[in-house]
Length: 179
Image (cartoon, rainbow, N blue to C red; front, side, top):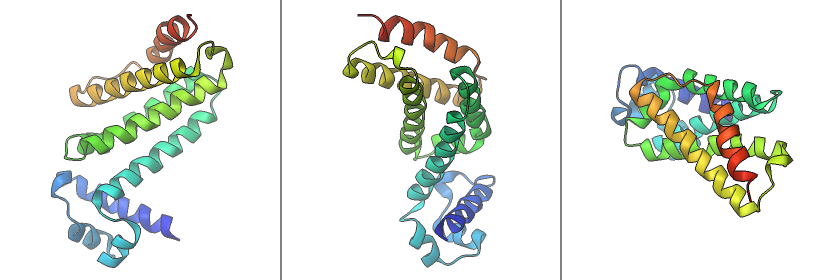
């Protein structure tokens, strides 16, 4: 039953994040908080960055699964950005640490999965060559990830309802469908 233990470790880490900067948290502090042995920690994770990456990945996978149960891109976008808002404290701590790159990469991967899901769900969007679609998906993923990171650091609230409409009008209709 490794997943419950992994979740316990991640919860302990979240508790420590309330009082310490992420870069100051050690495995010793974490095993004490979780009341587990070092061996148990290292059985599940090679180090703290691996634990962080796993935690973000689990959260984003759960979010993507929720997105797949929505009826349209606007509802899916709301679900996705509600997840971002709920995760803001953790993301802020991770992005404000030496784990910025790792966190941004995992976040971008989840945005790419979200966008790819809707591009694949709507074949009419695929009126271009696959390499162009991949380029536009990557471009849009970078832009949305940048918007998320910017909103976290500037404490601006993203207007979630505008993002899918703008993305659809500006990127999907004007670039992917154009020849």
